[in-house]
Image 1 (tube, rainbow, N blue to C red):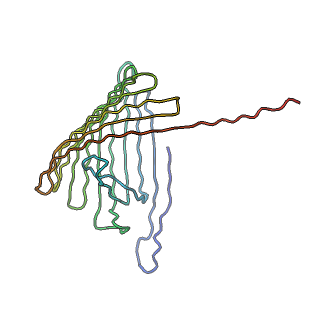
Image 2: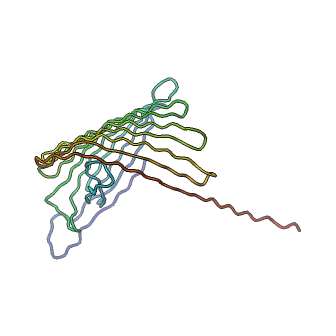
Image 3: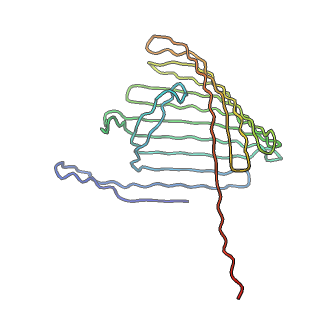
Amino acid sequence: MNLEGGVEKIAEPKVEQENNGRLIGSLNTRYKVNDRLSLTGKYSNLNNSNLIRKPSLQSSSIDSIIQTQTKEKINFGSNIVLGDEKNKILNLSAGYQRGIIVDRDQFLTTRNNISRNAGINLSMSREKTTHALSYAIAAITNNATNLYSPNFSHNFTKPINDISNLATLTALNIINSESVNSVTIQGELSYDFQYQDIHKITTSISSQVGRSRTRGESNNIFFLIFKVNYDVGFSYQHSKKKKDI
């Protein structure tokens, strides 16, 4: 368990306020019930300015980042180990976040941003091959605007040999709001391999197709992205031998 706390004071001499201070803090806890069940919980009411991605077309080529100042955040989670071989893990999660929108360094106090999310994930592994099935739903309320975004996905990873791995992703993303409605299908195939233990090259090709309707206007969606990533790591050890006397 980790606990932090303090008092936040608002120092504005020209503005008279009845309540110019508040208690702030955070609490992180994890409880292992037994070998098959563990629970986690987090709470924080610290003022944290962060960037979040709105549920959009799920593409890195689309700028859907907004800045918020988080006022309160609550998260719960649980891990459940299933099966006699303990090769299946069920994860349940839920979260709540309340904040205000930050636009051009100005706090829009009249535009509260409330986000709720819940998810379930089932991971199954056998002989280093892993399947992961996930379902998640996010709900964002911004004043009178409500947005719901369910997501279904399947991840698959399999080692080809001692130095390379193959992975796939298939996902269905849905967005439903008063102004935007879209349905997209996303697929990705990636292959990575290591060279001389310090070099790692990952190649991937991903595509996305679907249809979006924004304020009555419909558009077809199609993306095709090819990526190559190269990582290199070094380790250095120095030892000094003692001279014989």
